[in-house]
Image (cartoon, rainbow over all chains, first blue to last red; front, top):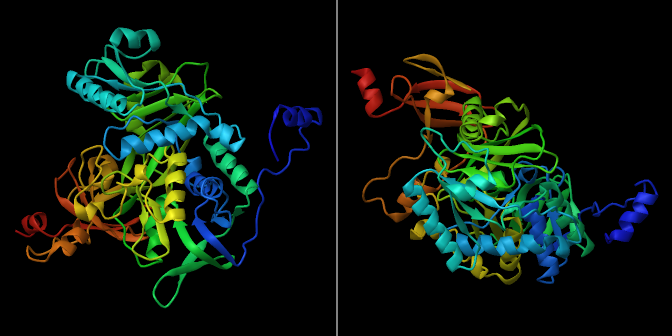
Length: 417
Length: 91
């Protein structure tokens, strides 16, 4: 179905009783040209771009639970393209441009809100680093503004500017950054991809790969039977190592838990997305009024989808250091998601060493903002067997070649990225 | 999650720092590029029981080998890590 002002009026007049299903709940066929493992944002975006941009419509997306039940529903909904390293800068801007036209492309309201993302700085050295990053962005045609303290005070008077240890001196602002409704992103891609013939198959867990005599992947074994595939693409977020192991692969990835939090709803307070440059705390206010925030990963391997208290304390301290007035706001919910922490903190989008199997992995905890860009470049790789130019540096062999994309400069330490 | 340090007793997680999987062993100097790549970058990333290295920086400052289930966070064994720390313990 197609959404419009008339469909909305019609549904409203009939008491919202007659909304149709927005995507088909398909049963698996025997064979597809492309099978995508993982019905999150990245997997569904890949299927949509395969169908809409590359003309491959005999596609299935397999999801072990319900679509969007993994990390698509476990993030802090921030979108931005304020990266400084070659490889990242262009890729995230491609993604940002796709966010800006997503609702028109998908005929779905994903509530993309370009309210701005501001990274605060607290020292002269940090100001210089942000100025450099802002310049890198502007050279590449991306918007960035360096704000001094008076400009910031006008915008966010409630910040703790006089903090004894980390006084807020200013910030790097990307006005085109912001937030998007995470569930609606999944639903929108499912809605649009399904409309072009993509089969979205839920409650279908992959338990192995079928291979031919030469070792080439010819399909997947699932809880709903064998499904043949010309090519298989993996977009399984924190489970990449487990799925790749079924094909005998070891990856430069560790799985770690990242916690996030929502407060009770309060009146409009935060005009934008804000990050605390001295600690690690990022926060925005949802359209319902809750403060949505998070910080570091817990720092040790985990598949538990729940975190531990030291990080809860650390994140709340970060929030209090920056906005003391939120101290009496109650915490409503907390959750944990499992991240693919790669060895350099950047994603891997590449053919795997096993023929017929393609990797979209290692998003660390920045995967949400990458959703449309990731889908586009992964669809490009699956359709044409060559990397898109904006993903050409996200190759798996970059670790062996010493060509890492280490935005944080932490080396091969996944728990620090 | 709390870790029972063999020297200090049960302590809260904030006192410890994580290094990672205890299984990878530094290859010999002449082992070649593949062995070094494997050691530095590739991980089993086990979903289940795993041996890992933790540093008790907020206590005795010993390196520990902790056996922990990554699916449940349950810890079943903690012992001094092999190497310098353990040698001191034995001395």
